[in-house]
Image 1 (cartoon, one colour):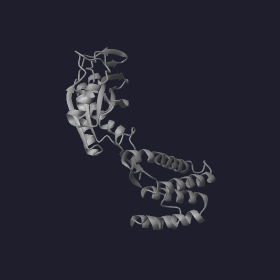
Image 2: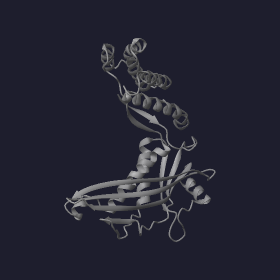
Image 3: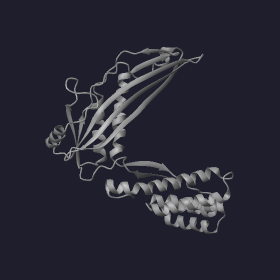
Image 4: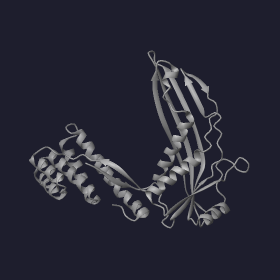
Length: 323
């Protein structure tokens, strides 16, 4: 069975923050020694490849994803470069007066700044005897700060790191890397990726999950599938409940698992957790060696139900509801 579950954001934005301004406060990065190639163990420092627009690319992508999620009432983008070679320094925070001025200019409640944007790449080529095998990693590090527009205090800080990866093979060195993107293009792609991923730090998100449903074992399981196909979970649950009450331990484990999945799908997390534990308990009486996969499935389901129960409080804080 496949459906989406709502996961909470990493950080709970205070509910009074309805609008935010995205700001580039990253000191210009000089990737002088950030791009390295290694061919058969011999390292070569590549020419400096600059992507000075990386912070702006990340901010624009984040703006698009914020708008899609509709979590904030309004998201603004300030195009001013606040941390320059002339007057700035690496990791310099926004000044109190800057935060106040930015929020006043846009009528916003908070400022979210990119406080650092660093990147680099590694290309590695190895002679495998018959052909050459090559890999390319393009990595980035972004430092985020969220400021309250009224107190000007830093509410949250986050270091975000990620890497994009490519691989290739060929008869010679050039052939093995021929399908790799240019490092500059790959870095731009990384910027979009970083912006799209950071949104989950501040905004709840839907995550697709797959749950195992047992459809065989005896006639009751087969009949329950017919009810599911008719979109009638309640009749299916009655049949699984009968199996749990009268079946053998393995049948009990499978039936309890199915009830747990059905309960979760309709938002009854308390009951889903209870039945997931009953499933794990029943499979445990059969013995791990006889049904190790089923025990792992029921254990994973139970642990995820515990996680979802724990996440409920955060979801209540973030959107006012946890189901």
